[in-house]
Image (cartoon, rainbow, N blue to C red; front, side, top):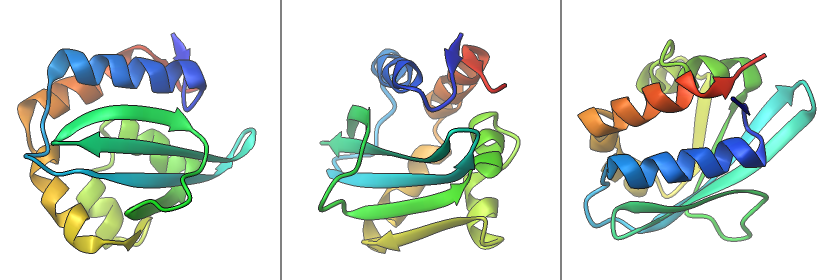
Length: 130
């Protein structure tokens, strides 16, 4: 079991993304995530997407990400467990986006893709949220 939001967990997320091959069309860009109030403090990590494929997930901060996403640790856990829908979290103000909103809108169909749901489910099953 990989600890949620650890380097090991981010590596597992990328490996499973390769396995499930979910696609964001032909989009390319990056998302900088900030998760606040985790047991170890704020956590920053990023996704890099090239030609629709998730090619990099890593701890750290990108200087020029296309999009920023912020939420609390508790909400990130619920989203990762599939208990809180990303769209609902956004509409309720629990997940905030900044930057290139057109890029985010292009990624929304990905969230409804069956292979994305399978990825999310397998990742959650291999995650220690404690």
